[in-house]
Amino acid sequence: MFYQPKLCLKTGQLLGMEALLRWNHPEKGMIRPDKFISVAEETGLIIPIGKWVTRQACRMSKQLIAVGHRPLQMAINLSPKQFSDPDLVGEITNILQEEQLDPALLELELTESLLLEATGDTRQQLSRLKSLGLTLAMDDFGTGYSSLSYLKKFPIDVIKIDRSFIKDIPQNQDDMEITSAVIAMAHNLKLKVVAEGVETRDQLNFLRRHQCDIGQGYLFDKPIAGRDLLDQLKRYQR
Image 1 (tube, rainbow, N blue to C red):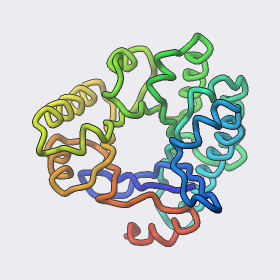
Image 2 (cartoon, rainbow, N blue to C red):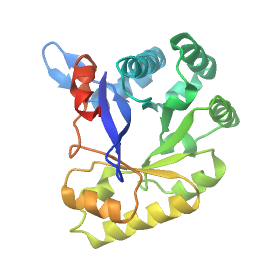
Image 3 (cartoon, rainbow, N blue to C red):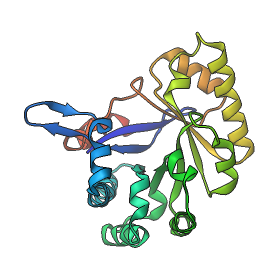
C-alpha cells in the first residue's frame, strides 16, 4: 500500500490520503496497477484484494490518529467487479466496525464505468454504502460521456477532476475553461472538488483562484509507502 496526501488548497492543511495499490515484483520491480488490476478483475482476485485494501486503509487511518494527527479521510478505489460481490456492503461494514473507524473517514472512489453499467443491485449497494455514512466520490470526472447525468442519479459527494485537464494549465485555454466550469458547477450542486495531478505552482494558483477545494499531486507529495508514512507525515503536524 502507498498513500498520497490530499491537501486543502485554501489553507495547505492535510485533509486526507488516497490509498494506492502497488506490486513490487522481485524481478521486474514496481508494477503499476494498470498492469495487474485487470488480471485481478478477470480472475476474481480483485474481491479479496479489495477487502485487504479497505482494511489496510482503515488501519492506517487509525494509526495516524493514534500518533497525533487530526482525523484524516482515507480514499480507496472500488473496482466495478467488486460490486459483483453480494457481501460487499456487509464486508465494508464489518471492517469499519472491527477497525473501529468512523465511516465518515472512509471515501470510496467510483469509476464512470461502474455508474454507466449500474444495475438495480449496484444502485442499491451504493445507497446502502451511503447510508453507512461513507463519502462517495466520482473519479476521473470529465473523461467519459455522461458524467453530468451521474451527479443526478447517484448520491455523489465529491468529484475528482482528471489530471488530463490539469496538466496543461495554464498553457491550454480550453483546459482552464473546462476546469473552472466544473468547479463552479460542482459548488452549485454542493459537491466538493478534488484536482488530481497538481504538479506546478501555476496550476496551484489557478485552482486557488477558482476556489477548488482539494489538491493532490507531485507538487505536494508523491505516493508514500505505508511503512514510511508515519515518519513522512510528521512535517504536516503543527
